[in-house]
Amino acid sequence: MAQSTRSQAGTAPVHALVLQGGGALGAYQAGAYQALAGWTETLDWVAGISIGAVNAALIAGNPPDRRVERLNAFWERVSLALPVRPDAGAIAPVRGWWDNAMALWGASMGVPGFFRPRSWLAWWPQPPVSWYDTEPLHGTLCELVDFDYLNDGPMRFSVGAVDVQNGNFTYFDNRNERIGPEHVLASGALPPGFGAVQVGEHWYWDGGLVSNTPLGYVMGELRGGAEQPVTVFQVDLFCARGRLPETLADAAEREKDIRYSSRTRLITDLVRERHQLHRRLHQLAELLPKSDRDSSAVQELLAGSVDPPITLVHVIHRRKPYETQTKDYEFSRLSMTEHWQAGRTDMAASLEMLARQEPPRRGQFREIDYQPDAHAARVQPARPARRPAVSGPNRKDTRS
Image (tube, rainbow, N blue to C red):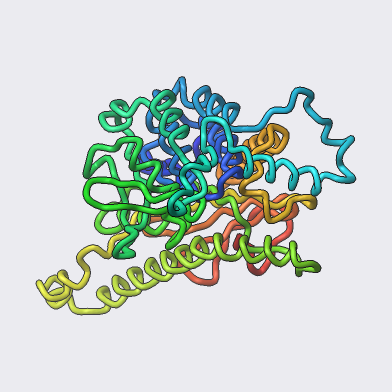
């Protein structure tokens, strides 16, 4: 597939992969990366939260020809395999009950290579601060991730966590510090299931407590002065759009989807507004006499307001009719393979949409959002009235 985001001047674009948290749904991101790897081997930056941090480490911590293999090894290891694999069609009438049973199995027995219930001895003389021990995940990361390659290789790597004692959100970035398995574990330490992880002198919990996506961090680092085209692939595991709940279980699932998807929409809106503001600042400066426009005061105001052309590609896991509120901790092999295939399919469709787009214009911000039932691309055009034509029906608002 041709890379349509290359600028007219021939400048190679920056490619960033942003991975949301979502537990067992993270297999969707692995499938999405498999499709992306077939489109380009050039990935400049990967950032993640929670399970997105784990997938990010598996990608950044291995050379290109081993990344999909390592992702597959991880998801095979942490998925619960039965002696006889059930047929999805045969259990379709009771699939929701089946998935809930698999989730209960994992919650009570633990997940191989990921976490295990704490021993009953840990509850005496006082209860522990978490239900599970994540030492198995530490061993898995050390086996499947080459942390020397992650730190010294060409790809930028960032994961987010929350300081338990002061509540501040922190990003661990291999451009600023040496990354180890503890940084990845900290990003995924969601209480009360998992305990806080010590990094240096501080203790950290899952970054999803504050923001379930590192999109804001990535976008903030990209702004200011650079005009090199940027393509950001945002792979979300929770969809903001959904049906009206009919039961208590529906309400619990819907609440989870809204809670963990909201940051993506908020940050996207803020980036779009920032681009609009910067463009208007430059339009206003053009109205000034040249002597005033070249003055130090005006140039100081315009400093850092040259935004790169950004194409934000949303790839979003869409719930299946049988999925319930347990979907993010249901680690069955059947669901894992379904999530993987769905991610690969959705990323491939998104890349096809991307290939049909014109090269981005200077300072342009546009969004590409593949949906199974409607294709849509949202663009912040140079002139507000213009929008690019794309195939398929259009919707007024297609945000995730």
